[in-house]
Each structure stands twice: as C-alpha cells, then as structure tokens.
Length: 517
Image 1 (cartoon, rainbow, N blue to C red):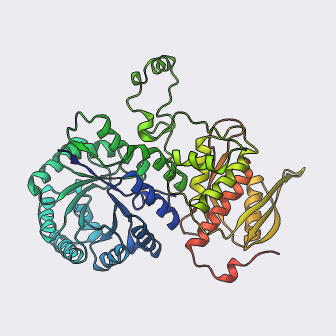
Image 2: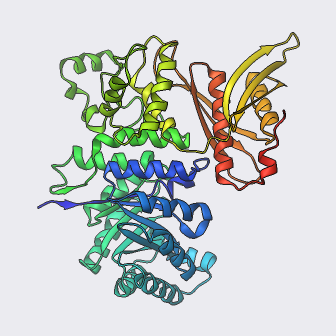
Image 3: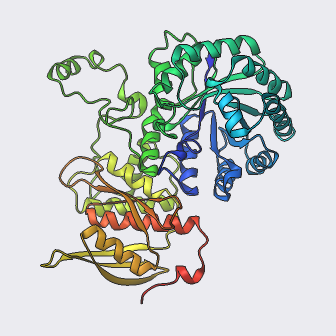
C-alpha cells in the first residue's frame, strides 16, 4: 500500500515574498488553477489578514479551485483566524494555518513572551480555529532553533486542542540534514499518528531540498514548497526537485509517492517565471534551460546512442516536448491552432481567449518564418491573464536626433479613444516610458528592465519584463510584453504594469482620466 507525501505549495504566499515577486489577483488565480492542474494537495493562497488584496485573492481562489485544499496563513490571533475563515468560506476543502514562534531568540526578542505564555496563546488560537474549520495546521516558527523539549510540550498541547498537521519550519535555513532528520524522528516517535508531520525549509545554506528529503525519510508526510524554489531571501524548497527525487529514486523511498502530475511541472515553472519575472538560473535542477542540454562531445555521443547514458530524467516526464517546432503557418486555420494548444496542455482556454491568441498568432506568422511552441506558450500565458486593460498600445515610432537624444511618438487607446504624444529621452526605452507617462498622466519609476528571446532564431519574439514603482515606498509592479520588435514589447510591458497598478488600486476617477488630448 502506498504512503502519500502531501505537497503543500506556498508559491502564492511565501513565494510572493521574494523581492520583486508580487502578483496581482488575476495572476494569483491563474497560478492557483495551474497548481490544481499540477495536482498540489494544499495551496496556501495567502495571508488573509495582511491586506484586502490578499483577502480577496484567497476568497476568489477558494471559489474557483475545486480539487485542492485552500489554505490561509494567520498569526495566533483571533482576528487573523476569523479573517482567514471568512476568506475561505466558499472553498470545497479549507485549512487554517496558525503559527507562532517557538525558538528562545524569537520568544524573547520578537514576541516578548515566556514559554508558558506562548503555549497558552497557541492553544487558544488552535481551539478558536477548530471551532470554525476541521482542518487546522499549526507551525512552530523557527522550530529548528527551538528546544526539543519545548517543541514536544507545545506540539502535544496544540494537537490536544485540535491541530491535525504539525509543521516544523527551518525558518532561517540554518539546520543541517542530519539534524533535521533527528528532530523529525524524535517528534514522530513522540506524537505517533495523532497528527501529520510537515517540514518547511528555507534555502539560506542551499540545503532546503535535502533537509526536506531527510524530513521525509524520518517520518514527515507533508512538504511545504514552492514552484522554482521561490521564497524569502534565498528561497524555499523547490517543489519540482522534491517531487522528481521521489519519482526518480523511488526504489529508495519504497511506497512513498506524491499525487503530482509531473507532466505539468514545466508548464507550472514557465507560468510562475512569466508572471513573477523571476527566471530560474540556467543550471537550475529539473526546470533550468540547461537541465537537458549537452555540450560536451562525449556527452552528446552518449546521448545519441542512448539518452540514459547522461539523462536520469526523461524530459517528457516533466512536460518538455522535444519536437518544439509548430507545424502551423499564416495559412493555418483556427481549428488547427486549437488542436495545437490542446496538445500543449491548454485545456481550459475559453472562446474569447482562443480568438485573441489566434489573432496574435496570425500577426506573428506574417513577421516570423518559424513559430515555436514557446512562442505560443508566451502568447497564451499573456492572453489568459485577465487584467483590466485600461490602456492599450496602438503605435510606437522611435527616432534619434544629431545630439543623441531619442524621441518616441506613441498612440495609446483608452475607452475606445486613441491618444497620442511624444517625448525626448536619453535612449529609446527612456523616451517610450516618458511618452506613456505623458499620455496616461501617471508617472512611474523603472526599477528593473529585462529582455529575453522567447525562442531561437534572429526573428525570435522579444519578451520584456519591467518592474515599475508608481508610488514611492510601495512594492514595484511587474509588467510583461511580447513582440517581434523589442521597443514595442517594452511599451507593452510598461503599459501592462500600469494596467496592473490601476487594477490593484482605487484611484480617483479624475486622475485616471487625466489624458492629454
């Protein structure tokens, strides 16, 4: 009989805490749907009490995701727990995740509470949460720097109060694998089968995945992780790595397995990277662009003779299709295009999204000799992210004068009306952004700018990712744009960030309508 390891994905909560990885509500919903498709057991959709935006995101995810448990994090405080419950009300399966710090340094300097006071607060919080929902997870923050005796004491108390999952986080990524194994084994023996043991490991010393594996080997039956290892500081346990370790070395893990549909791993990685603008490093295990690349002549020779000489994972097992060229062109019809995107795993595209993607595909076919799967994936990822389009780009024209100044003339549409203006800048990018600021009446400060080719070839689509600060001291907003022309992609990315900003904030109507005519 198989013993399942629950996969608890916290990309939408801890992953979003990666610097610059903030997502709007529509993007969170899109990722949540993909996580459900991936087969994630529990989706931690956010921290309901932290902001109205997080509350709404959890609430809407709870309405649309049916097969995964939806979870909200909260402190051991009644108002946090009630907020989590209210956000989760419509979920098919709901979990409240309560945490409090248990290490001496956290209790003394952060909480300013004595150990017995921490236990009292934890028990009270779990009892209150249990009165609202059946599924309660309790986390001992900084568990791996906590006294093992105190961990046992608080664990017993919260389990008696109703906690069904006990999570032991390595909050600061401090512990070594053998130490993690010892803690989990001791707690497993102490609590028996009264609750599911869980691990949540940070990667400050590069040990998050191996610490999670040691946790599993010693009795943990839930792993908290994120897509691409996103997370605070150096990140979290990478979901794709833990899952593929268990699958690839199954002979060592006997009956342990997950419910993850591994063929959705690559699509999930690409989606999260596209939305957050944070790409895995090229040599990242499982999903890095070099993970299945072979440059050495000896390696290439071996791969040609038998792929298993140098590949321990079949690329198709994680959703990488080796035949990447799309056999469609500008004369291809809508039916052929639909069949292609279905074969790529885009099964939930509605008619409006399909029509929009097909229209963009036909435009690209007029300018590009070969259209690749990655081009189609990029188009669909943008087309299926439903951010209200307050502004849309109509025309970009760049020129330079003899003094080295660039001039960008842009036309932007709002509410069906086209507005135009131009601006001088120190370069083409600077002039484009200034033109958009002039037309929209909203000034942004560019914090990051990146360009990459979506696929191969001189005529590759350019994907531009920008991070823009529209209000000083507030998180930067991410915007995306794809186009054959890099400057058009730049303008689209900046406008995308602007639209996201407007969708996240209730601006005064007269400010939104400050348009130069």
